[in-house]
Image 1 (spheres, helix red, strand yellow):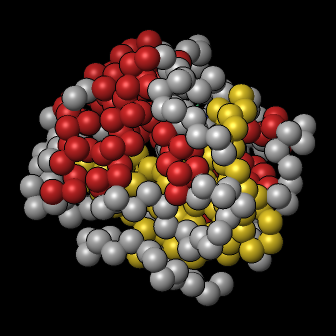
Image 2 (cartoon, protein in one colour):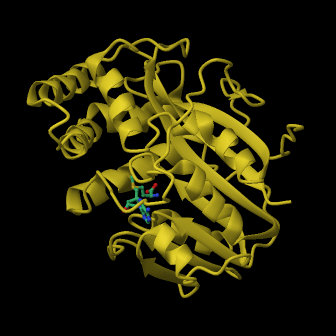
Length: 311
Ligand SMILES: C[S@@+](CC[C@H](N)C(=O)[O-])C[C@H]1O[C@@H](n2cnc3c(N)ncnc32)[C@H](O)[C@@H]1O
């Protein structure tokens, strides 16, 4: 399939734009549970998590030079924000497109952190349930957005197929998500033998999840019948990237330890089964603290932006 690069793609000189597969050999084939069950969630829904997400939003916007969305939208009338969390992006989309009706869905109630514009509706529930029960109407959306669902989706193929079903013909989706593996300042995978990384990738795969989903988004979108318009990444730094001021807030975010704490708790939940020894859980938890806490200048994960159109 031709790779149609949209005009308004990210312009950062460090950004790499790639046809699929982005880096040959790096794309990980995921096993899926095949039942579309995406109810399990491994992060918290409490005050500290909402604070973490709020700061993370600021850091992401700085990292993206203020460009929150990249799909070439015209005048969308109906927009969906899946896994909207605090609602910060839902509100941003509603303000950016005041004539649109913007729906934010999440497993948990959306906290009243941001004043809800009149054109926003929140719905609580699992995305797959909201689709299968018809509460989200198929073929009715002009734009479907999601960001940071790496710990939420248990079957990416089924998830992206549901997104495709909700879109109108000509509608766009944009997904922004991580490849959680750490890379050095030259963006080379640097810690694949690290206990945390190996454990994280395999434990998540055991659940049908994808710790590297960002890099695989074009594959999921293509198999859902969508036409990919862009797939790019920016570095989600673990330690400051001195030559790149736009990563300053993200460096503060990761070095604050709040992300590490969230992942330590997630490992506890994901590995709460007899198939994983307590020793392995502890070792993986200590290992992420040390890997991210002692990161060197410019070490980063990749944050991918992928957008696609329904033909
Ligand atoms: C890491 S937070 C990101 C929140 C928001 N997208 C942002 O970037 O600020 C992920 C959110 O997705 C929600 N979520 C995860 N899986 C979901 C699902 N299957 N259906 C609906 N919401 C989901 C979680 O409840 C959580 O609030």
